[in-house]
Amino acid sequence: MAQIGSFTREQVARKDSRQSLWCIIDTSVYDLTDFADAHPGGEAVLLQIAGTDCTSDFYNLHRHEVIQKYSHLKVGSITNEKPSVLAHNPGDLSLMPYGEPTWLTPHLSSPYYKASHHALRKAMRKFVDAYITPEAAEKEKSGEFISDDLLKLMYDAGITQTRFGPGKHLHGVDILGGVVKGEEFDYFHDLIVVQEMARIGYRGFQDGNLGGMIIGLTAVVNWAPDEVWKNQIVKDCFSGKKKLALAISEAFAGSDVAGIRTTAKKTADGRHYIVNGTKKWITNGHFSDYFVTAVKTDKGISVLFIERGPGVETTPIKTSYSAAAGTANIFFDNVKVPVTNLLGQENKGFSVIMGNFNHERWTIIAGSIRMSRLVTEECLKWSNQRKVFGKRLIDQPVIRQKLAKMIAHCESTQAYIENITYQMNNLSYSEQNKHLAGPIALMKMFASRSAHEIADEAVQIFGGRGITQTGMGRLIEMFNRTYKFDSILGGTEEILGDLGVRQAMKFMPKSML
Ligand code: HEM
Image (cartoon, rainbow, N blue to C red):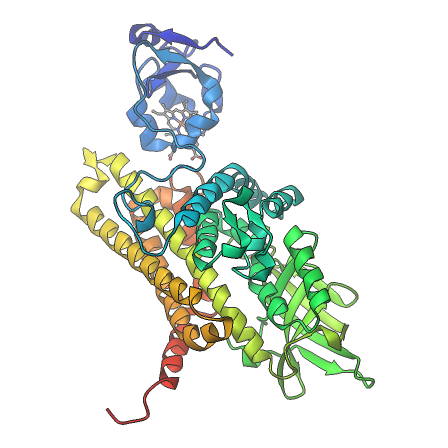
């Protein structure tokens, strides 16, 4: 590698041939002579800019991360000039208007967040940027599952334990080196963890990062019949030693839980259930050891905790996002399950499933809302940077209309979830089930509709790059390909809209108004 030096613009201008091909990007000098052959955009374009300052062309076509990744090509800087492009460091807040929710925007405030929320946000973003995002990028591509190293890092930092929401399981846990004590962790802290993790921008890996545990372990914690047994499962799941999936959907029944056909029949001695049936679209199913499974018993639906073992088989399902999520079919073939593995009461599994759904849906929405903002931020950056027809995209009224709609959706969905989160902080688990199942269902319906609008406009703004899996439009392509997961997982938009109104009907006054 050449020595890092200080050059004048005239010196660089002389390096304008195939034998010596230099350029200037934001006052840094790059030697592209050996790289030109390998340049994904071709050699010819580099020859066209050889010896010149190509900052504007470069940022018109590449993300800033490209120059960070190829920093080894830098041979020096222009004498007495300072760079103007701001570098993003792990943990930094976005400088883009609407790039962060109101509570993180300078000069604006919010009644919901205290000092510990701010401290957690800062520490979380640093952790995510430093450890989770790099692995997510790799695994999203390869389709491999999350590594034990990352699981250990998250557990040691107390992050995995938080993903299950506030509660006793967090007592004694110092989160991220003590920025928040487990005892004071509330649903706003929970919201921060979910939203910071969603910022990685790799939707398949995001679900592969213990998505199954987040939505399934609640049933164990709230309904396990035995404390010691429960604590062992929780510990194994948090530490990453064991993985858990929620197994409800079937080929015959998705949102229509009552239609499931997996059966659990008691043995003559009454000590076991024999489970037969299949489950489909089970997040993390392919790498899980435990399955919180909805089954049909004598007189209704029940929920069983089933361990991987004889008679349990899984096969991967290829969905539109990464195989890193471990989405699977599960086949139960005469699986013998002890009756002590029943979660909640026999034939009353509906309340176990429905109670569990609230936190699951809230988590899905929290992530979707944050991803929507990230996409909107990308569109703001791109429209401000990209020049077409002689002006920036943002100078076109039609683009400003799209951005306006996207921003309004982001702001309203974030305000919506903060309101619901505040209610969750002030209601017990059973009160939440009674009073928030409807509002959370309606919020999920609205947030995934917002994501639909945002994905659609974002692709239009990015054009061809919005349908390209690498380069400037990577995030947009990923979001447009995957936002639908959020409108289906945990209950479809249509079912949830209906549930929201049916719940409201329960509280209608009896009198004629
Ligand atoms: C240090 C200098 C440069 C490096 C390290 C670099 C690297 C890259 C990389 C990694 C890509 C692939 C991006 C993707 O995943 O789609 C790319 C694409 C491209 N690059 Fe460069 N590049 C450099 C300079 C330039 C310059 C100066 C130009 C033209 C003025 C240029 C033109 C292009 C074009 C046209 C593409 C295709 C991108 C698209 O169509 O969206 N590159 N470059």
